Length: 278
Image 1 (tube, rainbow, N blue to C red):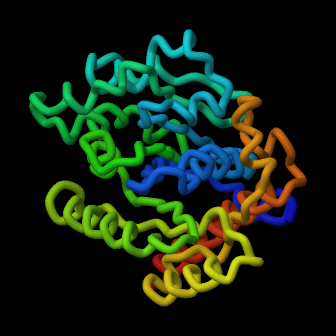
Image 2: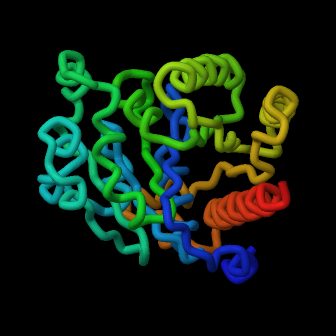
């Protein structure tokens, strides 16, 4: 699939950014990989995209080539020290895509937030000035359901969940869905599930097929049709400080993320059309 195939549905600009948390409390499921490469694919579809790296490990920042000494103004300074969020935005090598990086200080933010007033609202209060500057804001959450992830969920319109097709997938997903429901009832009524992305998919593995079938039976059309395959080029790209779409556009992983962006844009177009008719 080429970018031209979905260009027809990606030429309108939003006046208000869609804010999505990319979250899963389990590590190693392709969360950061999905954040970086879906954002790149959306930017390639002429969308203005911002990544907020909210993971203390800073893998999204590293995967975009942001060196450690270039992170003096990070999401930590925004949330904890109250600096202007626009001053923390950095351009990337991807046209129309920017990043707010994560610094080493963020590892202590969970403890610092505990005693702060309105601790769950630090991020949502900060990102207001950005909502008319981007079409999409993707927040790469840490692999835990702590105060950083809670801040992301409170600031978001929806949650995109990368889910590795493995034995314990549904158990972890159930826990996350309960957390999302609690946040929706108590802190952010607009929060919804944008969709489940099946990652590290191997069609040769019967277990992958079984897990995918179970997840689709459980959540129906909330599961994207596009699946992200296991692909060595996707794994190699971060070590070069590049999204896989820049590292190897033709590989199976790149093509899968382009298809995922196309599916998301088509779904949004259909949803907008249905709302207009209603």
